[in-house]
Amino acid sequence: MAQTASWLRRLDRALLDPVEGAAVALVLKLIRALSIDQASALGGWLLRTIGPWLAVSRRARRNLARAFPEKSRQEIEVILREVWDNLGRTAAEYPHLPRLRIYPGDGKPADGRVEVVGAEHADRAIERGKPIIFFSAHLANWELA
Image 1: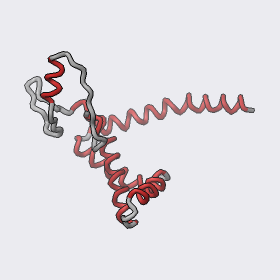
Image 2: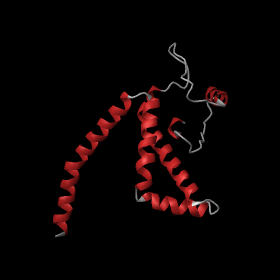
Image 3: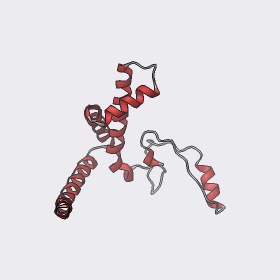
Image 4: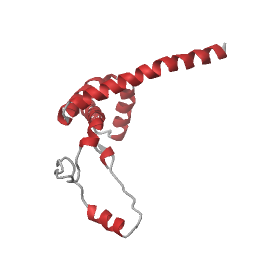
């Protein structure tokens, strides 16, 4: 019985994984067709709308209430929606990361979406052949770091 269940799970994965992969590839392609601002707005709206209804939001509400006991239920809901908005924007911006121009180059200017502070320190360390450790806050689109 256990062997049959295991075999069925493998078959299920063998059939579903390619379908899921194709669906994700299609969604990413559609998101890339939008401008980054449109994609960000769509991702934020989508998860802000759906996210609070997901089961994981119950845990988030509980944790937020524990972390902020002075907050009202309505304030917790606002925070939760903002969390989902941020996650949706980050996910929808992800396919656009290769297009972002943080530094000017190839005769093209930086696009101004990202401000780099302290790059001269990294440049000096690189020139001296020194190792570098980067730290980043887990804010907004943290993959840019």
